[in-house]
Image (tube, rainbow, N blue to C red; front, side, top):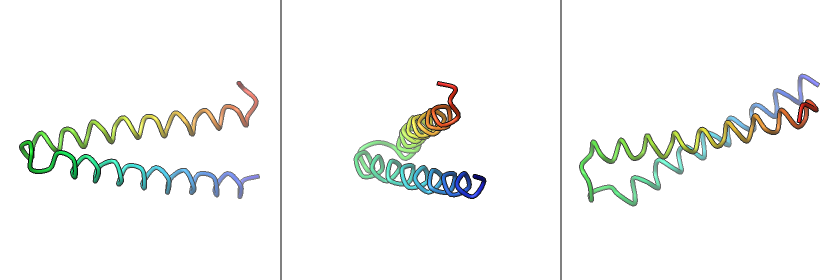
Length: 70
């Protein structure tokens, strides 16, 4: 049981890191050079915050469903 949980946590972690990297790079490619560097950093931070929140919610929902609480 513990081994499966560790594997699942590892998979979620790799997925979240990849999603955040892709999100940050996508925002950079869309707005890089069009806005100031400060604004670009703020947009990247905002987009990454949204993606991190969505990923955390999805992982929380899976945990809730598997534990039978939902």
